[in-house]
Length: 137
Image 1 (cartoon, helix red, strand yellow):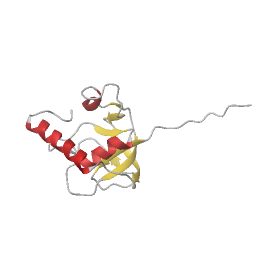
Image 2 (image 1 turned 180 degrees about the horizontal axis):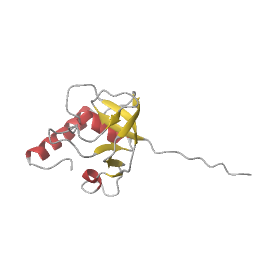
Image 3 (image 1 turned 90 degrees about the horizontal axis):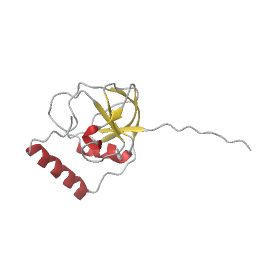
Image 4 (image 1 turned 180 degrees about the vertical axis):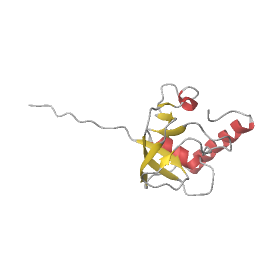
């Protein structure tokens, strides 16, 4: 009896309100989804759909919430905004890169968080902002 090896690649997701198409690059140098701060020097993405859903739901703007399957084009590292500050060990599988991520596809069927949970998160972020806390490095 022979063993059959299977290799599965990690899927990555990016939540936003930007209207993108497969092949587009999400690159550094653009304003954050979450603040009016200077353009970001990192691209943020996650290995879990739940983290990407938060990204889409919390993104600024009135456009439709979107989640994309993305692939990194260069080295990636754990996102210290979450892994060092909130969730040691990176259970949210949150990452960042200085290189672009390429849009592979859009996730069209996903369920958002309950409205009361989403409002709690928005209230918490507003509190941090009013206290002058840097939400994104």
